Image (cartoon, rainbow, N blue to C red; front, side):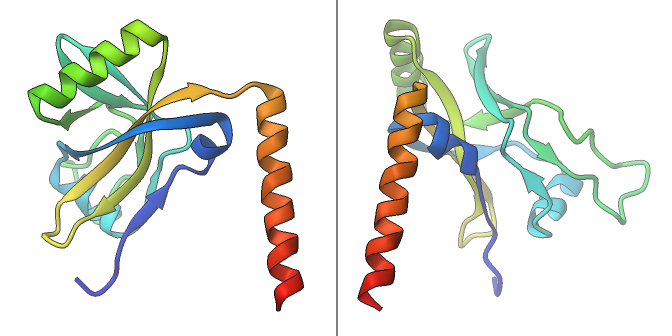
Length: 148
């Protein structure tokens, strides 16, 4: 594939500490994958939850396909994530034992042309943690400017 699609959840890195990452497949319809290939998806309000032992992503906005007719999809419908049973069990135990959450970080298309989503187990940051993150980011930027 000539162009690579990599949609990032920028808010996640600011609001959460990322603890563990997993790559999952995602169940999509035909018009959804065409919209993703066009780069029309938004992860900023997305989160993951367990429903009846399966993991779903909620709040993932995939815009309607412009050339889709009556077959077009609902932009904010819940989408099932595809993970191994062992990975699902690990995520489930971490979430319920430690009070953590599951958030999507990246939505991308791999070399085979399949849509994948990278999810992570995350812990929410406090306000002072967010300030530290911004301060570290600014100092890093200043150091890089000084070198060039």
